[in-house]
Image (cartoon, rainbow, N blue to C red; front, side, top):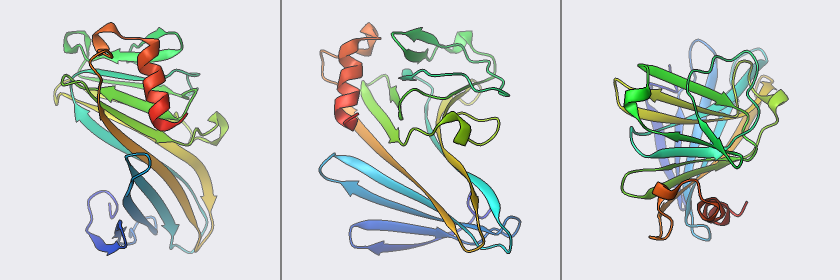
Amino acid sequence: AAMHNGLYKSKIQGNRLVLESETDTTFGLRTIKTFSFDDLESALAIEYQIFNDSDSAQSVGLWEISCVPGSGIVFFPFGEIPGNTVNNLDLDIVDGIGILKYEPEKFEPWHKVFNNAAEGWLAHVNDDNILFIKSFEKVPSDEIAPGQGNVEVYVSKPLEYIELENHGSYRRIPTGGSHLYKVKWYFRKLPTELSPGDFPSKELISYVKKIIKE
């Protein structure tokens, strides 16, 4: 609750915005989120660090959820489907890329898919051809929290939005220890020759990988 709904202390350190939560009264965990701009990559660099202030070791996995309006196309390098997960969101798989086109008439109220993506990125193109890419460390399947994937996509038909989710590794944090997870966000206006209407295109995938230097 302290991380999700609580107040954060904020400060500016150089060119970085630092937000620190209170220690959660149930779990004894505290989070610091740091935001800065990477001028060389034209990206927003985000660091999530979770601290164990409790008196015992705890197993924790960091999990980032980004919400986008219900429109456009979601895509990522499709990998294995993790065990012990319930997947009710159908994707098209073309040339190793998992593709979700937002077509609400095909959805139940809530849909989700879990996947251990083959590479560390997840992308969305909206109806205005704005490309949003999340780039992160590819976590091996045996280091992901139980019942999760290193990538998840959730669709809410009633609320008309999509969640783009990525997981860091699941680790045992000793008392006084911490766990760090780094992500970069990229936003680009798609060049006219890269219309998602022709998706999937090798040119668009190459464009994404060039941006994130994959």
